[in-house]
Length: 162
Ligand SMILES: [Fe+2]
Ligand SMILES: [Fe+2]
View 1: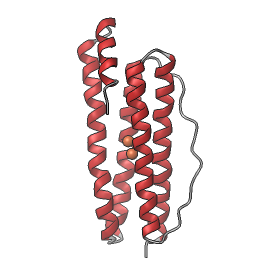
View 2: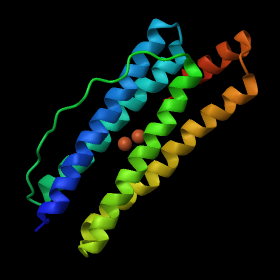
View 3: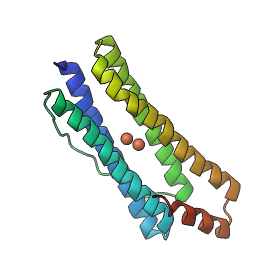
View 4: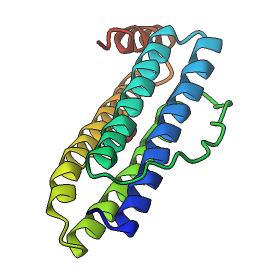
C-alpha cells in the first residue's frame, strides 16, 4: 500500500508535470505569434512529453491502488522578451522540476518504498536529459548571438524535432 504522504506527493508531481506542459504550450503560443515556427514546434512536442510524464505517474498511482487527485493548473506566462528568454525560462523551470523529483525520491527512500524508487529513477534520468537539451539550445544561442540569419537557421533546426 502506498503511503498517504507519497500519494499526495505524486499527485502534486502530476500537477507539476501538467503545468510544465502548460508552461511549454504558453511558450509555443508566444513563438507562433512572433514568427518562430521551429521553436514553436519544439515546444509543442515538449508540451506532449510533459503530458506523458503526468500519465506515467497517474498510471503508477492506479497500479498501486492509490487515489488520483487532479489539482488546478495555473495559467502559463504569455509574454517573453525574446526567444532566448523563452529557453532561459525553460531551463529555470526544468531545474525546479528536477528539485521536485529529487524531493519525491527522497521521500520514497525515507519510507523504504522500493517500487516507487525504481519508478522514479526514470524521472531522475529524464530530468538530466531535459536540462541538457535546453542547455544545448542555450549554447547555440551563445554561438549565433543576435545575428538575424543565424537565428533563422537555429529556429529551423528546432523545427526538425521528431
Ligand atoms: Fe516532465
Ligand atoms: Fe520537463
